[in-house]
Amino acid sequence: MGLPLDGIRVLELGDFLPSAYACMQLGDFGAEIIRIQPPLRAQGRRSQQAASVPQAPRSPFDAERRFDTPNRNRRSVVIDLKQPQGQEAAQRLADRCDVLVEGYRPGVLDRLGLGYEQLAQRNLRLVYCSISLFGQTGPYRDIPGHDPLALGVAGLLHLASDPPDDVPRLLGSPVGDIGAGLHALSGILLALRERDRSGRGQRVDISMTEAALAFSMLASVQVLQGTTVPRLNKPNAISGIFRTADDRYLVTTNLEAHHWANFCKAIGRDDLMALRYDRARRDELLKTVREILRTRTRQEWLSIFTGELESQAAPVNRIDEVFDDPHVQARGMVLEVTDEQGLTGRQLAPTIRLTRTPGRIAAVAPLAGAHTRQLMGEAGYSDEQIDALLAAGALA
Image (cartoon, rainbow, N blue to C red; front, side):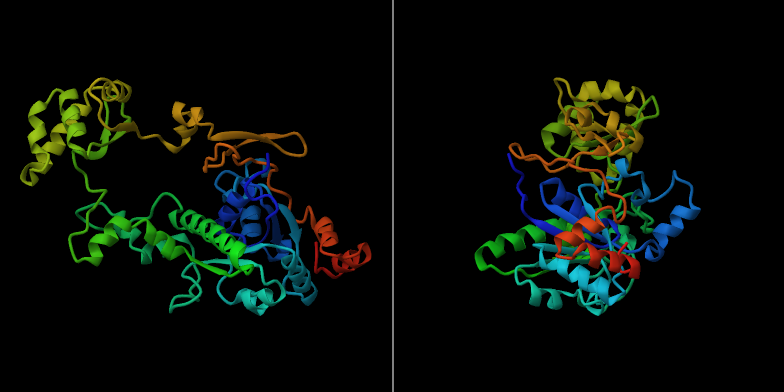
């Protein structure tokens, strides 16, 4: 059985996580992804990082190919977009594509002859998705930067602060990057669906900052109506993180009255039920619950909370424990892949579940330029023309 995006060809220009993640999702479900990569001399901090940073702390983009999750399911062509011949080669690839995904600063591709207006004149059906820090318009559009800047403007670094000091804190995951990639995926699919009716593509303008704003939904509702902003990370007994006797942690979310009642019964303190909304005794209640949960191990408490007196609780895994969690294993969230040399590695499985046409990992991340000759041939170049472009450095 075919996959949902079989027959969709995507051209990817960009070297960062948002565009890579969007294209990974498209490729997992059957789209053909053609990635344009710059010559090694132009790969900036990637090549510098590879030369000077030990393997362990490097970016995921510098992982061995069989572990390189964001860049799987691609074919790679190396093109020097600063050369007119390289720009023409990229244009000819775009002529044959349904979707273009790019992660450059606004205006960069316009200067290289690969902007939306330029390519749409050649290919009216092209869905052109731009992912940038602040979007294609507005006073911040030309500011360079990465994920934390988006989170700062969107207020998420403030929401991550620990009350009562309200000192902003960096998050431990690239929320802006992944959020932008998911918004790009949604925008591309919407534009393709509309193209089915109109026969024409359009531009999809994805801002990492606006994607981050989506994660502030609950707080935004309060701000926009001028009421108190709820702090979801403010410590409280009903929904919080608690340390157990074995120095592990569990998290609870007993927001519903019956779950809070069951929780109180399970810890042997029926008298705490009535304190649920008593703000004057909030700190006292939190201190009491913390002390009680320190009397048993995490697994002992989880067994109790998932028993007859069901309440809401789950383990807080360290990141190195996640893939040993029995639920994560049962859901098949890790897949083993093999590269062309027979070397195996593990990758995160597709996180979108379709029952009849599930996603797959068809190929590990390619070496830069592994498919240059093949792809240029498909774009209509003869062997002699490809040889000349390689000799001129327009291709590699």
